[in-house]
Structures are given as C-alpha cells and as structure tokens.
Length: 482
Image (tube, rainbow, N blue to C red):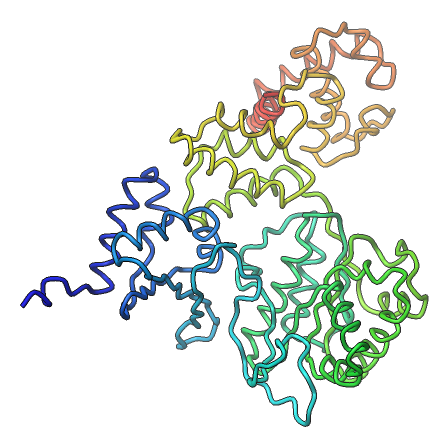
C-alpha cells in the first residue's frame, strides 16, 4: 500500500539531491557544474548520472565528491552508490557518442578513461597494459578525449607544431613528418598537441591502433618483461601499434637497455609505415646520454618546438578554457591573470581554476581584488614598479620586435615607432629625467626624447589606428603592474 508512495526514480532522486546541493554551494557553481547533469537510471541504491565530458567528471570528483556522497546517503540511504556516464564524442557523422561508465571514488581522477577497443593480438602475445588475471585482451589508446585540435589555441608560439600535427593526423605514416618530435618547456602544451593528433586519427579511422604512453611507463614495462622473460611479447605488442605516441623521451637518458629495445621497435614501426610521435623537453641535439643512432632517428622527420605564448595567445587560452567550462569572468581579470603568468600554460589554467575555487569557497564575486589575492600564490611580487625596462619589453612584445632594436641606431619605421612610444610612456609613467630616458635608448639626448613625445601626441590626434595602439599599450602597462 505504501510501496507506490516511496518508489523513487532516477529523476526524482536526483532532484532531491539537487535541492540539497543547491543549499550548500554558490549559485554560479551550481549552475556550472550541476545543472548540466542528467539522471539516467536507478537500480536499487545505484544512481547513474550523465556528465558531458571527462573534465566535468574529474572536476566533480575533485571538488564535490564528499558533498555528493553525503547527499546520496541522505536521499537513498546507507549503501548508496553513484556512477558516472561520461560522454566521449567520436566525431563520426550520424553516430551516437561513446559513453564510459565510471564509479565515484576518493581520488577523483582516472587517467585511463577511454573507449576500450577489443583487439585480437593473436598467439600468446601479452598486453603490458592489462592487469594480470584479466581474461579479456584489450588495447586502450590511453588518450584523454578532452585534448583536441579544436581546443588547442594556435599562436606564433606553436603554429609549426600544430600544422605539422594536423598533417600527421590526416595521413599518419604517410608524410615526411615521421617521426614528429614536439619539444618545449614544461606546461607549454606538448602532451595536449600529441594527444590531439591521436584523437584526430581515431576520429578519422577507428581501425587504427593508436597508443599514448609515457617514457617512464615504457621503461617500467620493459623492466617487467625482462624480469618475467616476456621481452619478445613486449616488443611484438608495440610493433602491432599503428601510431605510437611516446611522451618525454628525454627520460631514456642513460638507460642503455631501454634505448636498445626502443631502437628495435622504432625501426620496425618506421619500416612498416607506422607513425611515431615523440615529445621532449629539449631538442634532440641537446639530449644527453642517448645513443647517437637513436638521436639520428629522432631527427629523421620534423622537430617542432613550442615556445612561450605571447599575451594575446594567453588571453585566448583563458577565454577558451572559460567557454568550455561554462565560466564567466570579467575581462580585466582575465587580462590581469594573462599578464602575470607568462611562461607556463599549465600554471595559467591552474590560476583560473584557483580563482574559481576562491570564489566558490569564499562566496565572493570574481573581481580584480580577488584575482590579486589569489595571484600571490603564483607570482613572487604582485606589485611591480613601472620601469623603463618594463615599458620597453611590453611595447616591443606588442609590436613583435626585439628590445635591442629600440636601443640601436636603426631607422626602420616600425622600430622608430616602438622607440618613440616607449619614450612617451617612460616620460609619462616614470620619474626618470629626460637624460636618463635617453640613456636607456642607446644614449640619445634629451631633445630626442622631447621630439618622440611630441610625435606620439600628434599622431594620436590624427591617426585612429595609432591612437588605438597607444591606448591598448597604456592599458597593458597598467595591468602588468597591478
């Protein structure tokens, strides 16, 4: 008699959960992270919800797992469980997206989320990625589906690598970019771009066996194969792969046996037209303690470097991140963060997440004051004095010329313009004398500085484009010193 009154559905249960969650987090966080979720099914006390991406899943598990667990217990009782259904777009027209079910957990992240493709390796070859004791033989790409070309922001700093990567993705093993070596400093997007290549290849041809593996994982597997006398299986497994993406090959340094086995695998893959993609924190010529024959092969294809992104690219990266995560932040805050974190994209995105977390936990609106407080954890000095050197750097970065040129005697139009604008701001924003300003620009005299300032003022009155450039630079200099 009472059974119908207590019968719960996935939708009613989730609505009860939402009413509790809404009272415990800021409204903006609720709209961003919980409104897009869809309840799918309820079996006994197991509730399955669908989230739009792996990033979404990781964010919930990292930031709201305790709240979810307590809420579910309150709604469904002791022993209740939550399972995520993660959407993974496959890029095939007319096909439904893949979905991957993941239970909730305490750690919050699972680095191997992906679509498992059954694969017949034949014989008794063992897959080093499979846990011993499992009957099913699979090979997973180990790719993060959120790394795509669509959300990789292109700029002068990475254009070569992105263009070459897209060419490889369109015709793996069929271009002269084999191997493709992508190198650059920490946090500049190496892993993103090589995984984007792998994801694009999987979209274009699901039959291709694509494998992403770190050099450290490869070395660990090799050691295990030696210990278990299964080295032949190990080599045969890697030779089966159509596209091998090896991350951080600089860690092969000094590992003679590992280099030897990778040399064998490299040769076999290359000779059979398979695609090899490598990343490193330095170009091949700067790698130490790696055999010359292996370095030579690293240089066979194309080595493309990732450089530090310029300001416009950094702003674009933040804006894209905000768009994909459903976040709205004032433009002045975005520019402030982009100005103050210039060397590392990972830190740039980390600052954005930290800013969002500060806002959520403290229930404060995101503004420039909150950004200043948060940025103390990312930069050593959040308040810079305006100096002539800073002005020179910002102006030259804006016009994409070397600082040394504004100090030289060259009379090229673009250099003269940058020099005059720099002098104009130096006079306006610093306490330096005209003589001191002139000394910073190749020991020019005070009359040259006066002439430069007058020229800038005149052009601002008559040239709209010039005035817009000066106004933008004025804004950037002020933001950079907040």
